[in-house]
Amino acid sequence: MRIFAVDPGTEMSAVVEYTTNRLVVRADILRNEELIKEIKDDALHGCSDVYVFEMIESMGMAVGRETFQTVLWIGRMYQECVRAGRRTELVYRSQVKLAICNDRRARDANIRAEIADRFGGKLRAFGSKKNPGPLFGVTSHKMSALAVAIAFIDMEKERAENETRRA
Image 1: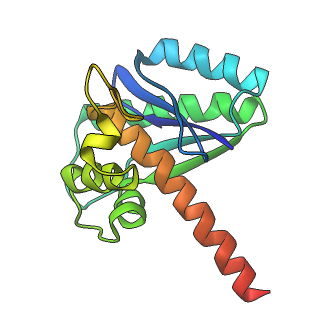
Image 2: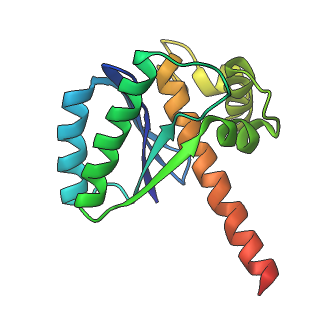
């Protein structure tokens, strides 16, 4: 399965295309307008099996204009996927933390460390410029998009296991 994961922002968003074979096909930061065009193209050509967007969730605090702008972009991106008839999912940050670290209080550093561990540790996962690892160049918001993809896969596995237990 190929996952098109997005960590949305107000003007730019991180994109990671990731497979269930643990392969990062692509990690990029794009302007949101460009990303909308890419989603249309990718969705129409059926390159990705599922589109997963990190969704904003209420934490009980007041939010500003940037948060609403980000939510607006999430809606536009989501709409393009749905128009093309593609499977589209929203994943909340708390779900990412729980799926990857088993703790809703996890921080970005904890998530990054856990992902590196899944790829054989920090040195093997990221490698070096001379000997790049599978996550070489996946930094900052791109790491957040990768975390969304990995959390989605973990949540799908858990759903399938739960359905098997019920049957």
